[in-house]
Image (cartoon, rainbow, N blue to C red; front, side, top):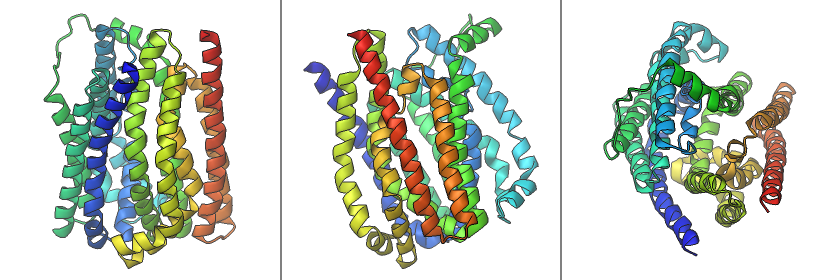
Length: 420
């Protein structure tokens, strides 16, 4: 009974922080959609997709090994090794602004290239934030995680509004986001003990750490990389190339604000699921009770959310963000299958990591992405209107998500049978 109380106490702590961090962008949203035009949101989305493509693997995905390392010394070695990888990739990422003109031409975006100069700094922020977040998660300081997210949200939204009002355009969106990343890092570091010196850390330790957690840089990195490649970089590229920046702007604004409530719930549950399941597996306990609580929690939250989107999305978008954004609400209705599956899948997406099935998960996701993106490309190439092409993509992508969820169920079932 105490474990159940502890779980829901942690959930409420994370949820309250995430709720505030997501509420702030919603409050500022009507201001931003009147300060920036659709094409500016589209260019920022392409910039962020490119930065995230490298940033997601900036630490070799070793950051997610921090909570599951058995000893503190092992966790510290993971951090130090990840920092070496991060700074190496930041240096290599200088190649991106050096080829900015070619990238802008590829995206059919005349302005994208001039903003890519800050991409190395963006990659550094993503890598450091991931390491900081997961160290705090290892400590189970859920209030501090919430504080970090709220600080990021306040800085990001307020700076974007101020700089947008000052006429900074896309730069306002970029610098608002970039500065908020470092603010989140600093806020969390201020409240934890930091051990800077580790006399035993050397090249041999790096090699042994990479050997022990090899699935993270070798497999999970590829998996995370292809996730961003498929769901952002290539998706945005197809939309930009076939339908233009205007349509992409409508889509990314919809995608941002429609996913925010989902992230609000699922990220809170996901962090707890990962930490609690790691502990259960380390103690040779069944993860079934944690899985049931997690799925039931997100399912109950999904019902009212999906109902509102289904019946009122265009009216809500038009009323709150401005009349020109009502079409974004129609786009939201078309991706309802994806949204519902995200509620169920996102909180337990760490299962392949916890069960050391990252290689199979990578193959699974590659097949799913090829199927869904192939469907979108075919629909776009066939001359469909964007909203119809989006429907085709939503159906194919949700089918992939459902099969992925079923595979998770089989993994848990088999593990429970072995434990029993």
